[in-house]
Image (cartoon, rainbow over all chains, first blue to last red):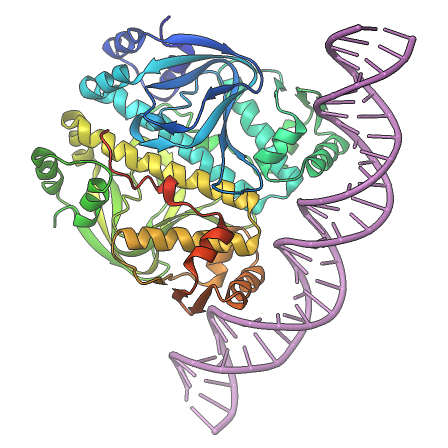
Length: 243
Length: 243
DNA sequence: CCAGCATATTAACATAAATCAGGCGAATCT
DNA sequence: AGATTCGCCTGATTTATGTTAATATGCTGG
């Protein structure tokens, strides 16, 4: 199985890929595995041999604070095309757990191929580096959202971001998206109790901004949702540019 | 002026540097500028030509949400040796403002040298990449801290982290540190009102965990502070390892 | 069809943090 | 010295969020 075309499109939206780059990417062998909702894609620990990317479905990163901590926190969400685990290629140890949200197909790439890429394809290396930098930019946006937004606006911000990211890879359109997260999981993502998340969902419904049944969301008033959430897609760095 | 030895030590704590790597790093010319408290080191905008690192003093990253947002948020703090702005080498645009906290000397590296490095020194490239990955790991820890900790513990976590990072570069020791942030600035970092930060400081004082006068902090009970903050230095990735 | 379970929802109450209002003390300026 | 500014500190009140408890709803397996 070859490296997901989703990821190649992820890169192509942001920079031009030459024929040699494309060939090098497509030559990387991967192993694809299927996961069910809640399953662990990668457990924390040192010396990982693979990094992984999302082919299909959604996945997330569960970060646990050390010692007797109240609960883990979801610090990132990944959609198809996201190379979700490049970090562990350059870090000694990442003690986050990667898990599937809903059914998901994940591709695993052995680090030897990334190492080879970093030795012989500097342009691609910069693009992989860019992918981790975009992850970090999303982290910063989440930090800012958590600091400045109240629960409803905070939840709205998440919906705007995920819709934008899903739409960018063609998995969502027409202001409809599937978000395979329980309210309990939204709570540990946004940093609220699940009851409070429920209040926030109700608030957005009452304002007629969206319909939300189970995992299916329909955004009824995108401009107003964006305004409430102070959302702008800039930080996702979707623009095409030489790097 | 050559690339700061602090940054070289930052790398050496985490991996071995060969003679060629060292020579390549030391050959990079930099320009050093002095900033006063509150001054802008780099303004947001596209097409930056330089990245910068902290030689002396402290600096931070101010992230502003778009359009009529309540306030900016401090999403990162940088200490001597931190290559604080590698992001903009690989990203099209970073709309964060970099500013000095207290007097600070900052080194500027032209992107042409980073480009050269990424073309010809894959091992060093991976290490720079690692530096941005560590930044991202710190972001995730801040996200987790913001979600799970109450004000006092959250503030305690920040103090633990900054002391650990300052001590790692030899700028702090004996459980004493200088933190050139006003309570107002701590508030926009932690996501509280400054009045509430004041209460958190008082709480830590009342518990006899630290003395805090102006910008001078003395940690009186490190183990208890660490326990309260659920702090562990793991995420700073200080361990030495091949990458 | 029912029992059993998990999730969503709501209400009532408790706590945390924001906001409002103001006082204190040190540094600076006139 | 007096006035001003700024950061620190504190109490009173309001708002946001957490907690507990209970009900509803939708699924699954018998």
